Amino acid sequence: MDTQRWKSVLVPRDVYEEIKNLAQKDGRTISGQLRLIFETYIEQGFDKQHRYGNKKDPRRINVYD
Image 1: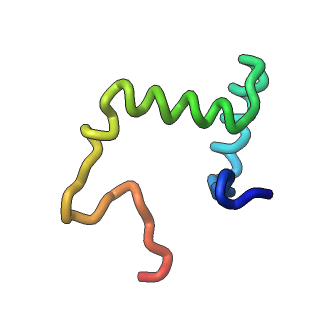
Image 2: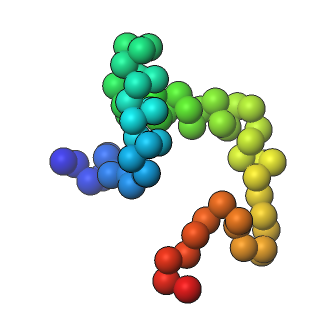
């Protein structure tokens, strides 16, 4: 795999299954579905709504703490 162009992403199994099902239903690849989800996220402005500044992001879990 060309690591300059592609990267692996770790997601919970239930999220993967849902993305896979959505992709199959709409005739897309999983990477195509992820791209669509990301583009929609940006277009709808969710990236600006979910900024936490210097506070700890409550959506993240640091398994090393």
